[in-house]
Length: 242
Image (cartoon, rainbow, N blue to C red; front, side, top):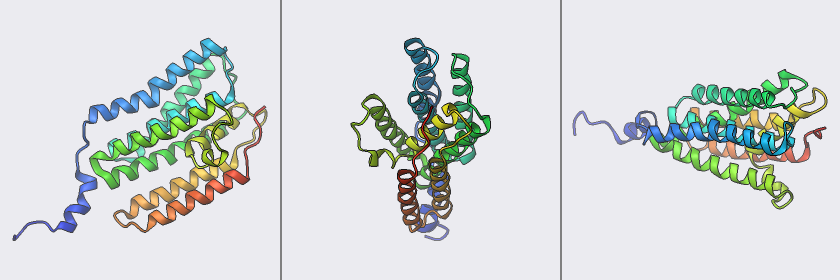
């Protein structure tokens, strides 16, 4: 039919123009996973364990917060900067809350900020890719990813040694937890270099895929990068937290 858009042009425009399904529900999950649940967890842990809960617990709570705010917000809004900004705000707020509850300040605020920013960028990049590739349904994919990684992370926390190490090193949420733990609780200005490199590398690879969408071949680059960086985390473990 004359004047009708081609099938190719319609398919290409869908990821950018398709409205978000149930936006109020999507933003509710951003609030719950990024703010409400982590804040509740910190308050409960402070009551149960005192002002200095184990570093692994604080790291895991912060990782879930950054992941929930970064991925779901970017997927819902379709904007990388929205997920990045909300994740940084959520993570910074949780750190200030933990310190207000009695957690000692980290030895080097620069490394703490670096860990939060790099992790936030990595998660927001994934959310932006979901928005680009799945349009208005992208936030559902983001929600399932957050729920899956959070479940594995919290299972490993509750039952140490039950999950294989190779599974944990595949998770950006675990990289984030490690990086935050070292930045907050190490006795010096040491950082989890491999975890931070892995988060930055996956952010770059994910943004490449999002930029080149709907081309599919960059997924191979992203998958290969993810495996290579997981191997780096495996072979270059973080310094122990004192």
